[in-house]
Length: 445
Image (cartoon, rainbow, N blue to C red; front, side, top):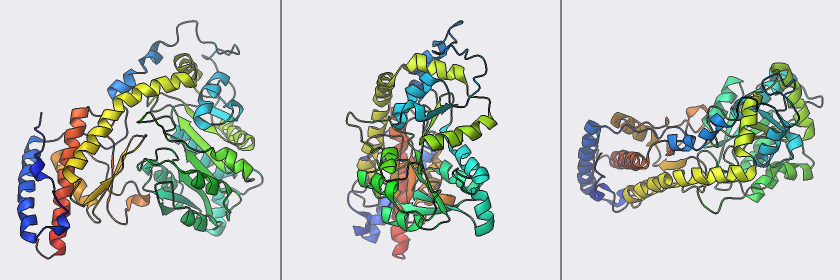
């Protein structure tokens, strides 16, 4: 067990206000502490938002939720056999409908990855169009030039990877604390080549913010240059609260329907961080027309989803009240880890004027902004200690953070003591990188 870093290593006042000789002396102490840590090693990962072993164990009841003979759905379907339609079991659709905020009849339930549903929605739009006589996006791109998606940033790297995979241009837009900068979004959406926007509307990855009512209203009703513009509403953290007072999110589909744009939203969710991350269920919700569009193509790709997994989730979770009870247990395991991150950052960085970080009310991440031009240096220093962090820039399209300042921290997987220790080590790396940058700016490095 490594001893906690001494408080004397923390910046007691903004680094920029220290005289050069004071800052040099401070850096000497920090470098000595860093070298000691390097020799000991800090083998902890804060790189990806994975449930801990204790969180996964909360759902071990799934493993015995079905017994021989208990393989029949409510309508008599034998879940060991082909289902023959892509919509999923009616009881599974009813179970997950509250995650999307739509009636069960407007839900399709599939296998474990909502990311796969998003991939398929883009693929169907590229190859076949979005329905209603719209040309395939690929044909439009071939005739008029590449299509584009608006990408609120920092954001989810897997969304950006899907854009890269399909040759879609990415248009970064800043986050505001209430969602993306809607003035910028509306300007970009007026271009007919812009076909969509990525949104993680509740406890966004990585900033943790929830879209405000005005943001939802403007997304639902804004004028778009493309009639086939789609909002990819990835509500991955809908029930992943970290406090007893969860954020509230307005209903996008209802707002879009009122605004005359019922086909604009495509809604996605999953149980990936509710039950088993690699063996959960995914859900797609949309207007009746969009649901038929998606299911029509999905029915050609597959005979149907894994119905036994759907049935065991129904048996185990039962209903939305069951999901909420389970998520309360998740919250109790996760909350101390987020508190440990905040405490370590506040103790070592709180007075240095070199970093700002989020205190999320839910989700899986803390978003850390360091001094401009320092994120890559911080990650390199951390890696030399053995600390695993997401690559600097990965939260931006193309891996290019224009200010080189954002670092996503994922504290959920490691034990609390390791999270605290790793955050302290990372904070020391932040102070080192910032001190070097300030000195270099003075020509005193």
